[in-house]
Image (cartoon, rainbow over all chains, first blue to last red; front, top):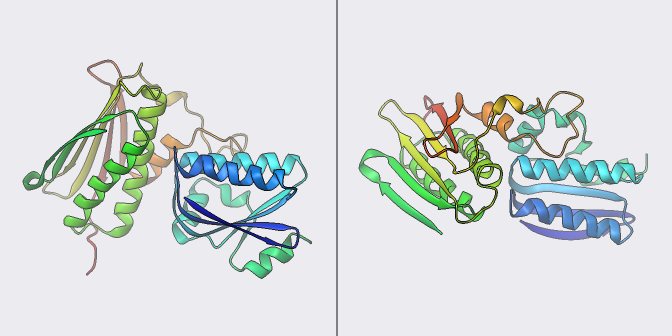
Length: 113
Length: 151
């Protein structure tokens, strides 16, 4: 998995690309989020537009990071889910947990509402 | 490192893998090649691949406990009726699928693990665990392949 980091105001955006799977992208996802929190960002937007696969380990890291950030008073939201990633969040019923957006401006605005 | 036996004429592949996560990619490539050569629907290839990823991850992590000296045995078979069967065996201590909690239960929704078997059951028609001859776990995944890729 490759990650591009962007900051828009007080929101850290992680543009994710590739596979978030066991032994590869799952740990990297957690590290990128931990780095963001360590840098003082507690509003994190994960852009899934370039993510082709997420396995149960990747989902586990996503949930773990969401929970950790929420406990610290932070927010993590998801952007540009592909149909397949959306399907996975539906079958796991995690679609009810995450805030999901199709447009970046709308997602950014939502952090301040 | 993996040892690969690939029999094109029978649309079957047998692999012996060391317990390394990178070998999951190898199996997925073999599976993908077989599915594409038989013009299996792209969606079906994708979801079967996801289920097989989970099965291999379980065998490597929970079965063989990441011991690189222990092997994972994989057999992929496309039969004439276009049914895809994948059998995966590990050299671990066995596995009881009944002990896995429902990850969609509201009390488990935010757990960071325990979704692998659920993934497999969502994406395959049949998921069957049994003891392997050598003492580990034998997992048989089956998918009926009735939809061909439209060209």
